[in-house]
Length: 214
Image (tube, rainbow, N blue to C red; front, side, top):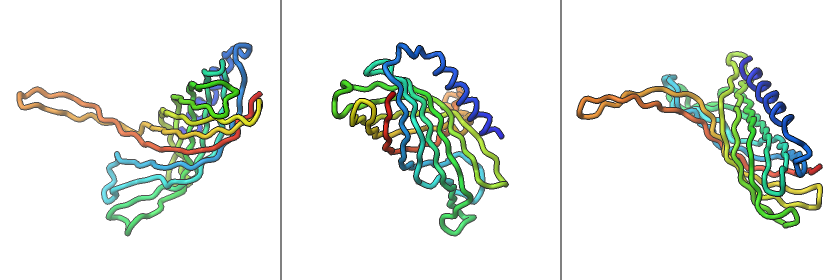
């Protein structure tokens, strides 16, 4: 299955990257399991007649973040998030909104972040950017899964309880490439140009997790 193959490529690639990090140079290593809520996700580029809208239902999400702290301010992070949801459709083929099938959405992201302040501060803000893949796994025998390139911006606040345990509050916007097509534009003077138009699926996730520092 294509989605499973891409998912394993992301995992293996990330492991290789992290394996080259000189651990003696890293200030610490963190594991943050989290729970949250994911919103958005509209497919706008499709040709099915009688369907005006395809959307992923908002719903709970959970996952984990692995963090290498190079120092008090710079980090490299592997972010994984899973959502069990459903795909719904609107249009003339349906009376109102219809749920089509259950859908699992997995985000794998590798990125870097910057954290302000010092570790002894009660609240520290952070911002990050990451690249990765989003996997769509329909829970229906009539459809196959797929994985696409995605990027994200994320940020939030870290609130340490002590040297090894703290609270991490985060918001993350993930944009996943879906498809692209070329349009031809001609000006009044007879010159024509080809413009590439890409379609992206956007989701936003709010989460809270417990960061454990080693």
